[in-house]
Length: 79
Image 1 (cartoon, rainbow, N blue to C red):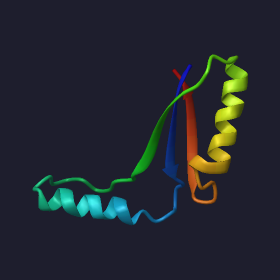
Image 2 (image 1 turned 135 degrees about the horizontal axis):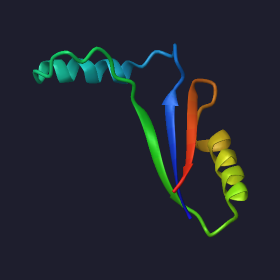
Image 3 (image 1 turned 135 degrees about the vertical axis):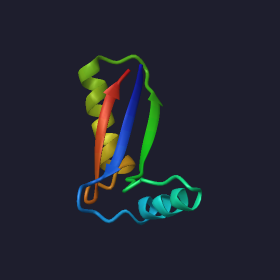
Image 4 (image 1 turned 30 degrees about the vertical axis):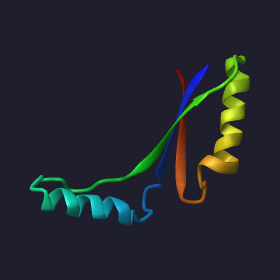
């Protein structure tokens, strides 16, 4: 079973890397980019599990390692 976990900063959390990307894009003459929010994507291959068990396991992975839940949100997709 394949899954994709997307981790992004929560609204209101400053994103200095996103600001740096906006500056870099502007210096490369990509005008009109107002903001960028960067994040992480994890493509995970699991053993075949029932979907509910896989979702539970992925949630535990996010809570314990993949996301800093104080400042980040995560979304789990089973592919």
